[in-house]
Every structure is written in structure tokens, then in C-alpha cells.
Image (cartoon, rainbow, N blue to C red; front, side):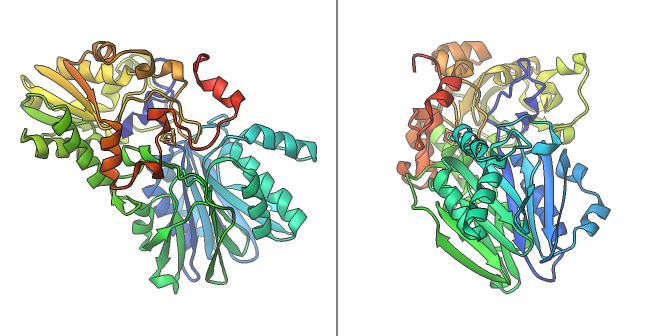
Length: 486
Ligand code: SF4
């Protein structure tokens, strides 16, 4: 449920009750364009991927400047900031932290660093699984770290190997050979834009062209960011690929061999925007098909189908179309209550989900409802939601989830809590239903989720549902999140 992101910090346990996305990245090379302003609007389209900090770095071929801070995109940048960022290439970032202390300026991105005569700015989406060993290796050769993020490890790796190699591309290539885990990165020096993606392709990264490349190139986490800056989608950056744009010319190489395909299937359920396209699949349509599959596999007699805004809406539409039960708007979102640095009072905090969602009582009162949502992680948000609906006079609540039960934690950049905290990992279906207080509860089957993407199962990481991790997770990291007997 996209807007329960604000649970982070407000949730009863202080932990998010939804999988949390890790970041949005964007890079633009466009001579003669106001690239800072384009990046600003592109970052608006990627705001859903991270709301803790935002940053834009711009270079003009000679020097590189950055503006970044904690907060949402419109809170971070002023008109005068954008006017001061002059140049023809830019890198931008929106952040949700999965490693490193969240509310520290040093951890905001793009990260800027000197590499010999050059300065680089780097923005990362994902999570390395060998950060610890890389930090030790770099520490042993005298590298000093300023932040606690794995993104800085990438910066230091590129720095180290660039100095050894004498070329930035060679430095990136060697760094990619050493890094394990998920990384979709955009990076720039004063004169060139780079983009590279881990060999498993866990996080999305797409390439777009401005005026067929004659006016420039754009790299972004999602196609919705290409759309807003007027770039045409060209293709995805391939797993293990390194792209460079310099002097207006785009070059590409397979920097490291592609590994086991591992695109995060949760992007199709919740993380990515419904107007984005991944692997030729329109995400709105995928979510609609998920709802239709729920109607076919776990039907229920009801009067109305509602979706939990925003990510549950397409699934609810699909459920309604397939079942013949009318679709209705049953919940309105307090859209701008989103992540804020102003803490609610204790009494407001106790309002829980009411801060975010308000029921349309006259529509749902007395009805038997099918409520379509994307996932249940710990269960507290769903429990509050069911209570909210009951207090609004709903006769029956039938929860339908467009994902299978989340029973394994994520190590690749999504904050899904430890396995002990995942309600479906520790309780039967009926226990979960009872905990949330619904009349019935059903999940989408994993094969139906895969089917909704139109792609074969082996193209995806599905580990939080089936425990099959496509990238080996070091023992120490597993111990931190998995149950001991696992
Ligand atoms: S474990 Fe789950 S959330 Fe993490 S990358 Fe795999 S499918 Fe996505």
C-alpha cells in the first residue's frame, strides 16, 4: 500500500509495516537544456521510491556542483538552487534508506567525491550484500569512510580502481567485478554520464533518448521519469552493462557477464508506479491481472470491491471486472500527509491509519466488501484498516492481497523487516485473518503473480515469497534477518 510508507517512524513498533523501496535514480546528458530543472521534475516522478532525502548534481564539463538535503523533492530545492545548477549533465536521487542511518545529511545522495583530477557524483538504488568485506578490504588500503552506506562503498571502490587504472570506465568495470548484490547506479564526472547495473538486474534501470539521442540521453529507475522529461524509452540497461555518454555520444559495454536473472518481482506488485513499463509489461495492467486472478481463484460473495489507495486500486478494478461485483471508491487518501519532519502528537499518532485514509462511509456502510491491497508484512496496518472499515459500518471485510504471503526477508534493497516480524512467516492463514480481524483473507498464488507479468518465473527474484535468493547472501547477513533454525 503505497501510502503506508509514512508508517516508518509512526508505526507502533517504529518499523515500517510495508516493504519499503530503496531509492530512485536519474541521469541526464542534454547539451543546451536546463538539466537541473529536468532532473527536478524527473525526481518528482520517482518520489514514490524514496522520501527521506533528495539531491541533484550538475556538471558543465569543467566543474560539478551538488544540492541535496533531507526531505521531499519540493522541500529540498528552491528556484535559486535550480538556477545555480548550470551545466549539461546531471544526476539525481531520491532516497529511502535500507542501510546507514536514515536521517543524516551525509547519507543523502548523489555522493560526491574527488578521484584524482576528477570529481564524481554517484546515485545508487539497491543494496550490496558484501559491503562489510569490501569496507574491510578498502579500509586495509587506507580508505576512509564518511558515511555508513553501501553507496559510499561503491564510490570508494570506483575511486580506488580508477586511480589504479587511470580511467573511470576501467575503475567502474573493476568495481563491478568485486561488488555483489543489487545496484542500479547513475554516476557522472565533470564531462561524462555513466550508468551501470548489477549482473542480476535486481532493480530496474531504463535508458531513454531525447529527440532520438540527437538532443541527449536519460537514464532512470522507471519509465515514468522518462515520460515527464519528454524522453522516449529506448531499452532497459542490461544486467552487467555499463553505459557512458560523453560528448553527446552513447557507448555501451558488457562490463561483467550477466548472472542469474533476478529482477525484483515486487516491482510489479507495489514499488514501481503503475504508469511505468518494465520488461515490456505495463504495470497497471499487471496489477489489474493480479486482481482478476484473485477473483478467479479466491472468489467471495460481496456487494462492492474497493482498493486500498494507491497500489490496491488497479487490482480492485481487475477483481471487479472479473467477478462482476461493482468497483467503488471506498477510501480517500490524505495525499499530502506523507513523510514529514513534523511529528504528529501522541493522540494523532494513535489515529494510526486514519492519518492517511478516510472512509467514504455513505458508499461502504452496510456493504459486504472485497478489499484489495498489495501485501501484508507485519499485519498492523491491515488490522487498523479493517477496524476503520468496521467503524464505518461495513458489514463484511474480505481482504484480498495481490501478492503471496511475505515469508522471507529481502537482502537486496527492500526493507521487509526480519523474518521474526513477518506475520505470515510465523502464523497460519487463519491466525493472520483473525489478527487483522477480517471475515476472510486470501493471497495471490505465486504462479499467478508471475503470470501477471507475462514473463517466465526464472527471470525474477521471488525470494521474499519462496526463499530462493538469486544472489548468495553471506552467512553473517542471513543471521541478522533470518530465524535461527532457517
Ligand atoms: S527478496 Fe522480494 S523484495 Fe527483495 S528483491 Fe527479491 S522479490 Fe524483491
